Image (cartoon, rainbow, N blue to C red; front, side, top):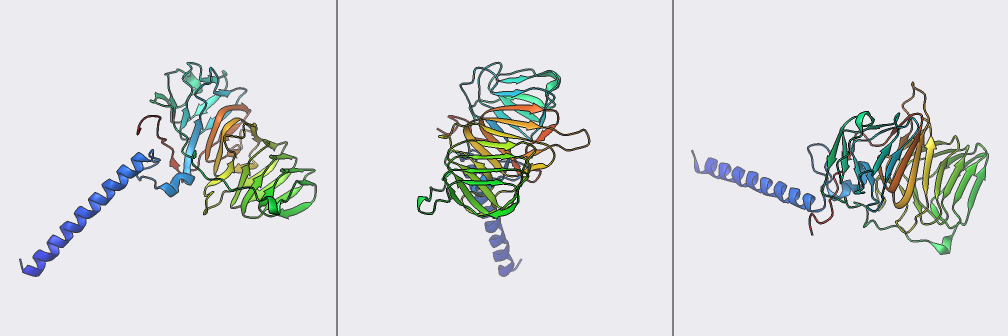
Length: 311
């Protein structure tokens, strides 16, 4: 072999070795962050906005941190429940948790109500969004209270100290951006649409239902990437979403201090409402007569860091 060929072979070996080291270092860094891994590829820090699953954070709940009643069926790629209670998950006879993996601190048998496997994990699982920086209130440009009752309107992002309410069969389009709400959002018989939208709920509650037609997608860039509803832990008001197959909400719903209730009503021929790709709440109750869908096909399945794992 000529000197040139030997040098080329040596250079190729060095490149390969550097690539292996770089991949290993990246894997360690990802693991330390509390790996968010879905398929065979590890997710980077920017992928935090593009994960999928359900996390019920209340570690002190004595029972029913996750509860289901009626004929509700929830489909999600993974569910983590932080309560150590033996009755952390409560289901009625006709309800179904349609998930490959239900992670609990204590083993539980849910029988036919669980389609997948119940697994124990050394939690509690840590909220991967706990360090998220929310936008500040812009009191100098306060848009105050927005109430739309009927008609067709397009609205723009900003700070609404009095919150928002929609009704009277109003048709409302939200321009892309971040909507900071000081007193929540409510809908009753209204249509709400918006792409690239994030609702930040600093105060008040989220109450979206009443035959609402909802179609929302989150921002694809910026600080609120992938997040469609963000309610900080300091706001402990309830989050309620109820609807049929006309409710399609993509993105993360993050409300770590809230008791959340999701209700779905869909006929056998309908797919049911899509209520977020990732749901992180304090407690979660589900009801209705149809399938509730949580989780995006193209998103990585959340695998959160657990308390003490990297202390």
